[in-house]
Length: 148
Length: 148
DNA sequence: ATTATACTTGTGTATATACACTTAATTTCC
DNA sequence: GGAAATTAAGTGTATATACACAAGTATAAT
Image 1 (cartoon, each protein chain N blue to C red):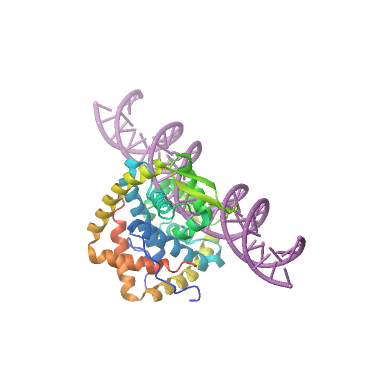
Image 2: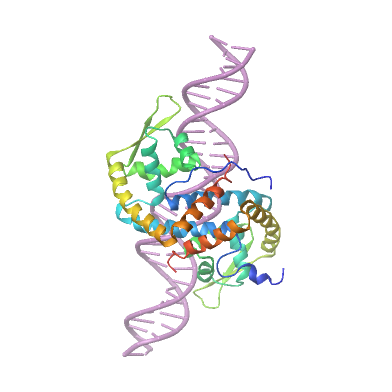
């Protein structure tokens, strides 16, 4: 406990959480920049991809799959519905709603997929195989902290 | 620490960005939970700590120090001003504003600092020294992707 | 001194995130 | 069959995030 000033050196912060949040912002912005030509963000591409993966699923199930809060997902879908990339209709169980990918949504995924690959390749190359493996494992372990 | 559930691994996505975002959410929620007794989030504690570190600074300088967007900082300060943890007054240069920590803000930091230590210790123990070092280095490298 | 340039902040807009509470529908249990 | 418990979705509220644009102030250039 010698010098308090060193508790916050320039970079990185001593706070694991803050370091994660900063890296998350930086990397998200990097992906978003690369994805710009297709008109959606990395968060939105992820949403579309999960809708494609679990076709005709419901909101709660999709939220569980994506591991985000149900109400967050609900609101994140809004701009994608408005731009016609996904559509929502009533499910068989009247409590549920069914989420569908539109043709435009599929086209956007196709375009976004290519761009995503560029970003992904760039990051992978930037880190190298060993660090990439490390990172993936560490993040998986950290994510396990989330309830359920 | 009782908050940690050891039910990993959850399968990582192939997307580095998504993995980061998920881990960021999970870890932020973990810290937020531990910080609950002091009434602020980890993001807010970080803001207060940076205000303390760079006393009487301006919005733009503080944003640069925290490495977040200036307008984001501007809005994040609002609830802290309303709850009386920080105060804002005119700076010498009439363009600028001076950000100050209030006595209540200092008390909140003191309380938050202890709780933060608990969360930090929990995470550090959960990962272990080697992984913690790896993580810190990887995140610093990734954050370097952000434009200046 | 006036103009041009750079700097500092604020606002409108929009997405991302999640908690608390509510409503509606289904399932379970007696 | 009807009450109780569970499940699915929606809304209000609030914070976190950042881009585009605007307006005011200070400094540099002429």
